[in-house]
Length: 236
Image 1: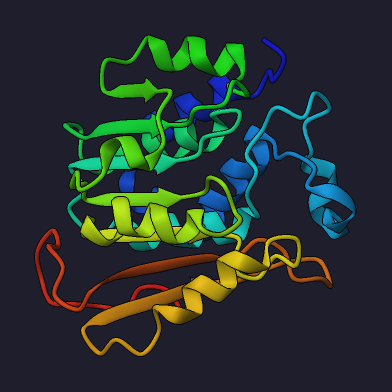
Image 2: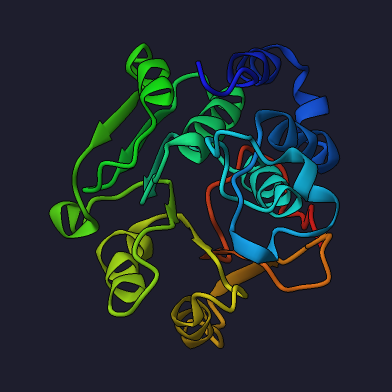
């Protein structure tokens, strides 16, 4: 296995108490332990030391994906679909994390490319609750999931298509790369969704470098299905 930390992090997610997994700092450190991939010269600052030498890791800014996952964990997520899985690391990590909060979850990764890492594929293939399909959102148009994470083709018209095909039908939808200067179409489309009084929109933009990198947006109805209790804002 090229990334020696995958199994260790997978086991930690499966064993750590739920209250610990609700701590964004803990989750961010699990991302770092898993290993991140280099996203060009913008991978600067203290996160550099967590780049996996074989570049098989999670293509996310650790604090951003951690806070987004902790936020989503307060909702009842029965189904999760990631559009665009690249090496598959983020799909594996997010699926393992969300499963701790709902053991019956069904997770799906769709991507027509062949970048999926063989080691990660082997791990995913062992789990009957994670399904991989060489599809785009066009092939699943109108299908409803509790949580959809859009991280596929970052150039228009695909961000809008992924939203129209699957994102808008989900109880919760996430977008990756809101503020990344390399992918301006994502931020532009995200901004078109703002101003809807029936929606809650959250942005997770933390970056330890001095440059804007990645950025995650979460959008959902004001009255989504929660696990119970009153609505609460868990992440600023």
